[in-house]
Image (cartoon, rainbow, N blue to C red; front, top):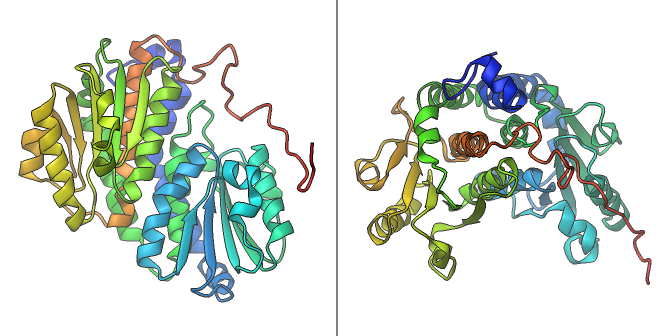
Length: 386
């Protein structure tokens, strides 16, 4: 097993981090494998979409990290693929208030994400869609071929299981990026994305090999909180990166996510001299104007540590960053693929913080305070009263 941060295999095992380390490292390989499987089902996918018109309502859904996959995907699908209505709605919202989110007369494609496929809300959201929507189709993307989601099948459903991304560690890492890639590849099946997948995988491998120690050194024990900022499809990545730190440090380091422009409107008050800011720069050239404005403001107004992740080198951004991670291959990455490297950087930062704090990354909550698969959820029948 390869390792991170210069640790020996024995040290990684002793820190109870071997699953998490391996699952972060394997991501470039996982992405190539997943896209190969999608390409192998191209004809089947095209046939399925032959019955899905551009007026179909697309709902991307999941809970927790799986929901953040939906958040990171929706803006790009809305922009690139011509569907008039694309929404990310978490299963936790659908299950709690189904009539507020599911429209009986709206022809709908529900795309469900789940690592284990056993979260109660994941199954309930599909059942509610079947119950409430007159014309609903499904795409199921999961990482566990033994889970309940993997077993959902009818003539209106495409089901995908990617076991190579079935993370055994507590926190979702390769499962997040793997499902994100899978969904984009499926929805964009008319294009051959092989070259871009290889490009992003090569960039991630370079970051994992050459940048991980730099990222790790940014975390010091006096750090008390993390802010992650990202606009557009990177907002979903920001939400996921913030959750990774919260999970892997067992809540010892508080994290918050926001959009860069939204952060000015009150949340900026949370900054302290011991805050790390993880800033995901947009892959959109227009949005980068606002990113650079905010980066300059953050660099001038505080003594916070600023980690900037960008899709391609920008001298102005390098000047304001304490740590600058960019595509050293100097080859622009398509906007749809812009969340992948930021997600990897967020994982590395969270893992480093976890180990330095003496947490156990593979199981940060040995007492069971928080569970890998959510516990305690009671699904109530629709229409029941109390």
